Image (cartoon, rainbow, N blue to C red; front, top):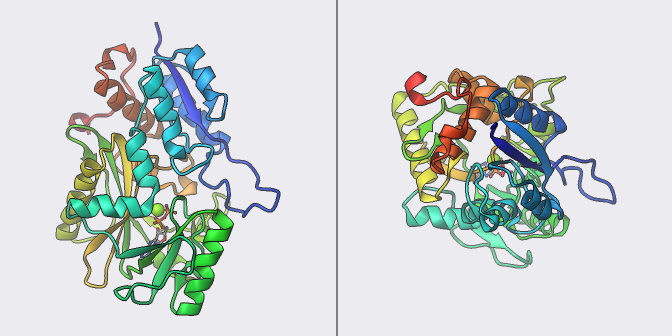
Length: 352
Ligand SMILES: Nc1ncnc2c1ncn2[C@@H]1O[C@H](COP(=O)(O)OP(=O)(O)O)[C@@H](O)[C@H]1O
Ligand SMILES: [Mg+2]
């Protein structure tokens, strides 16, 4: 019997009704959903696509898959990425990736910083603004960066998010709060090089080759941040901005430090199967974790510059191998790896 997999996702749509243009930016294109389905089918699995909407609970319950491949960002709310995993946990259906608690913590950038600090893992100094009226803490000095507390894909991170004075700080904070209907997080601006680090596996996870975001490739006069404009407007498959370098050209000591931080972060937050951490160097050249992505983007087209597939490609994984290996790690956690009939697309460290 082929393994039956439900693929849960949220499809990108065009924002209307006065919603900001980046409202749906975290959701996936049909192209990504279909590429994942095809990869799983190439491993001999039967795939049923399930959009992660209000009907998905009943669909998953009646489909009764062996396992769910989950890339759903969730419909709405402060724990939206946890909804599908929580439903699956209740239904007793295995699924790929991290659980509800990890996903809810990582969606909240302040909560993530707080958890990491318990483990002595470095993240930027920050303050959460709920109303926008709060007094800026004394230990936060300009320049600062303003982001929505619970978003991803640089949603709400614009060229204007890097602020250098009180007036622009106030303006940006109230824009975030009113546009995205959530608190803003204000962080010290880390001025150094930027990296993103993919991790695969569980007990003995592997770190993929480190990706550098080449901020000097941004248009002149642009703020040195990997903003919404940088990810989705200035860099498109038809007009690519060559902004990722993998493997990053860094000294061995920095590479070792980044890998160590990535693995400790993965464990501290209870990540599973796959994750990607965004890191930047502070003014002393020391890495700090900006955020943790337990649902990293998996866009198949290399020209889209999706960071985790780029890192995997550099380590020798084809796209299909990346997807099937994530599946295999999940199956292994549940003691179900024997159910995967064709393992030729599973690439484990020994065979690297
Ligand atoms: N504290 C910071 N210092 C410097 N740059 C930052 C900081 N926080 C975010 N950025 C910039 O903004 C981008 C998006 O922020 P990030 O925290 O990764 O949010 P998202 O979840 O939207 O990807 C980062 O890739 C980085 O370029
Ligand atoms: Mg990020």
